[in-house]
Image (tube, rainbow, N blue to C red):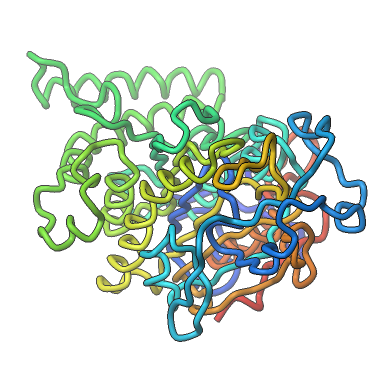
Length: 457
């Protein structure tokens, strides 16, 4: 397979240590990305999209003129009634702009002047796995490269002693048996496997089998790797499979990571003030708070793309209780990450993205009680926030109708969002392609998509 970027002259490019020749396509505003993916789909009604008019429609049926026959999931399509459920949580004005933010997110409210909140994101998928896969790879079908892999392929590495693309996973307390995640979400698809994300685990060994076995000296390990590399080079000369070269590179990276990973994951050098800013969970490996702190430490060391996944946002029932717990898991640490990056001078060239795979319905799933309700999947609109990396701070973009059901201003589909992320990295999403099965494949599909330039500085 030959890596290519398709430019005006359709010229093929070759991959170098720094990435593809000719990239970035334009001056980047972000060198690095941290994607805080909230798996399970946070409800926009209880977080970022304030809908006070819903109170007057409480318990009434969702008008057919609003739904317009749009598809529903199998979980609510058989309901005889679709009663509107206003949020039981209050919203408060935050920041200089007075942006309304849920009381469940007080720390996020404290950084709202650094955020660009997009309220008009929409997707094509209505169920979790295809929707998450679509957000991360640009396709509902498995097998495509993830956005982090595309960034690594196009731009290369900034620190040869750590992976270019890292994934971190945590599980929330809001719904312990939430939707599962699959390693293909941070995979390289049809790109060479050297570009796939490396998952860091919680616990003693963040990367499995990284330490040198007991009784083996560093010099012995080095000689062993040299011998294996020679065998692999000999095999490559006969077979020509580029994955053999990837194997050599990954052995070498793992050898270097024996020193860099322990230093990265040892947070004993963090100040008490910094640890307190992230909250008490920062002391527990594998939590969202610890992963946010590790993300900042990776960014300091020039890891290009850090992908956090936090499971448990799928509140089909008992939403007031479950969502409160999810927000408590994440609110303080998300805000601390933005503050921490800002005070270290890293936010200006680090793009932070927060959001899930789709939104939630305005109507209740199941029985609507005065203080209890659930919400089904809703792909028509949901909210995402971005910060740093060339994004305008302190603004909101796009709008939904008074029912929070349809977009009425500045729609942004998932491909547009991904194109915007790539644009901040200096990549023209239409020109970063890879020849696969006779087609020039790209992250954002074949439709005409655009970066959302209105939210960029």
